[in-house]
Length: 409
Ligand code: NIG
Ligand code: FE
Image (cartoon, rainbow, N blue to C red):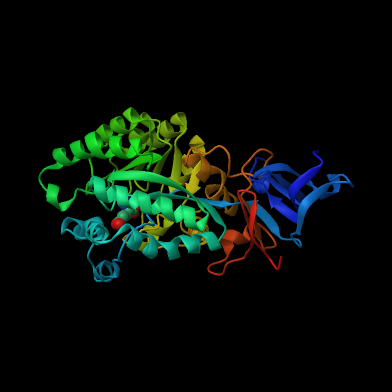
């Protein structure tokens, strides 16, 4: 063990998520951090008597997990769609609202009116809510601009929020989210614009870490999605897919065909698609908030995912239409109550598997060498993170090795 650590946390139990049963749990442990990385994790009794640290924090018997990771959000947007919520409650469907020009295109109208500063100001409280619950990495998609300048505005707003909040933000370009109104009846021209201009330009400006598409009857066809993915590949960007949310369009298999990092939603995914995802190493991202808000009844094929060994991530899908959610902890609960995940699976879904869904190998588990994103919880067992509905047991946060807050310290 090295001489002096930057930070030593003692008196904790750890859900390491680094393999092994029950969240890789380690009771009566300690964790040491140096240079923004985890330097050592182990039983506290194994700490050498002369171990020293610049700063030592006592966890007072709480549980430590890796920083939570929300791997699917659309949290930068303007306005809200509560009127569509009311319309759905009186019998309209998400698809009929979208076909009538509402839905995603309603938010596109609000985003195009907003300045970058407006977007940052409206989105800041949402990101702050995530951060307060121990989320240390968030993926944010564009997709409410639907032209080059407005997609750039969304991605720029996401990057600038990251700078001010300290949460690590990964950005995803979602140009193929909906057909913008000005391209109605000119589908191919819009896909051309996305492939020939938006993806290459925004990739070159390094504003996007990945490319996503909405493959659905009310959005883009599998062939259009293939074109978008080919453009992403040429621009050197990884891909992800909104797949099989409302119908089986073969989205899971399509995502696998392109070696996607993840296929998300998947309520209607078929068994062959899940098997293809397993072979390709594509993560299934489960979004129980959208399932709940749309009052869907078709549950994603969890048993097939388990049988094929597809890693399952859990995310908020934070967006103004189908998932106005800013609590990843609530999604852990819903993943268990609505989809039947065990609490350990749900926690893996917001840590190690979420990291993989973003292609990030340096986080999501507590192990030597990993990024030092560490959260302290006032809970007696890890299962409490998905058992409780509401409330926030987060008692301390260390982000990238820096103490953001810690009980009374
Ligand atoms: O993930 N499915 C497509 N996109 C979002 C919905 C966006 C919206 O309705 O504004 C989703 O559910
Ligand atoms: Fe989404």
